[in-house]
Amino acid sequence: MAASVTTPPPSLSFFSSSVFFTSSSISHRQTLKPLLNFRPNSLKPLSTAPLRPITSELATLPVLSFTGEKIGETYLDLKSAPPETARAVVHRGIITDLQNKRRGTASTLTRGEVRGGGIKPYPQKKTGRARQGSKRTPLRPGGGVVFGPKPRDWSIKINRKEKRLAISTAVASAAVNTIVVEDFGDKFEKPKTKEFIAALKRWGIDPKQKSMFLVMELSENVVLSSRNIGTLKMLTPRTLNLFDILNADKLVLTRAAVDYLNGRYGVDFEGENEDEAADDGDGENEEAQQEEEGPVAEENPGAAE
View (cartoon, one colour):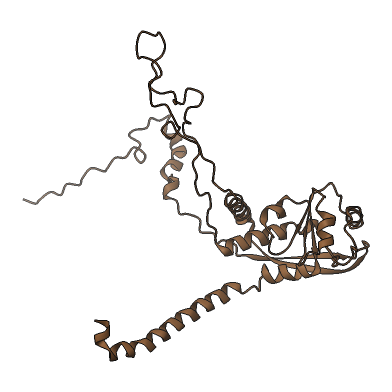
């Protein structure tokens, strides 16, 4: 007797078989196809778009004389963060500066630190008042402070390269409102605020607008002539900071200051390499010193014991 081969029944699926559909619902099967291809966002591959590298922003700036005439042009070539991260880099730099300026010396006394309050102010019962155990409770005048400030360190760390990139990005973004003037340190024979305001007007700067000057050296007459102008900041490379750059409506640079910015915050700055070379040199000196001290220690083994 020949063995009969039985075929298994076809598998049934809700989306593949017409058994679960009526004649009126078969036409709706096309609308269910997108559901079969649905993939949640967690299973989709992440976009691996490469970040844009740090670029160089080249800006041409006019050079004005002390009388306000245009005598030439110069360029400002600084590193600039890509547009996707420029705002975050500058924000981190300004937050770091503002927090590091905080002294963190604010302090209050809790109820356990305030003097007095050791005796119970009145009996517990038979007074009709709320029970009190100390006169220095935070609910009474002269009592302690609840959750008051205590001395703390507000400083936060930022990498030197990131801080330098934040400053260069801020200066590069303000190139539209930047002018270059010739050195005016010897133009003021005596301190005179009126003469400095007249010079600002010749350069096209409104004295009522906030302006920032970056010069390499400050003469005494320039300092005394400009210190009574509340909207003006006179800075040197040592005092250059991110807040004054962002807070100013106009940036005024000297030619020497432009050369300093291009050298310090430009693309060709090699300060990091110099620091690394110095660190490598220190390591080599330490190794050489250890090699010199090694044979001496071996010659006198008893001294070490």
